[in-house]
Amino acid sequence: MNLDQVELGRLYRVNEVVAPQGAPQIKGQLEDIGFLPGEQVTVLRKGVLGKGPYMIRIGASTFALRQSEAHMISVDCLSNA
Image (tube, rainbow, N blue to C red; front, side):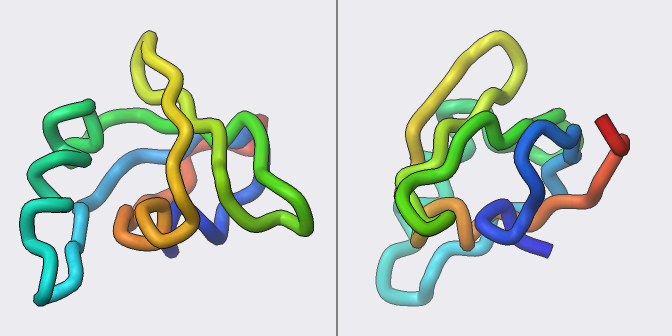
């Protein structure tokens, strides 16, 4: 599943970042801020109607991501928090 499809408050693990063909630099940008395979991530808050922006915690950092960016991040569920 992708990060834009997850439940709030649950713990997930990043599998990979898949950027669109026309914008491969986005993958590098997301990896630079910590979205690397194996990292644990939690969605803390979603925007209006469950769409972006998303407030994401990865490691000790918190970021806001657009829905399109969250959709590029493949994750697996780690807990039922």
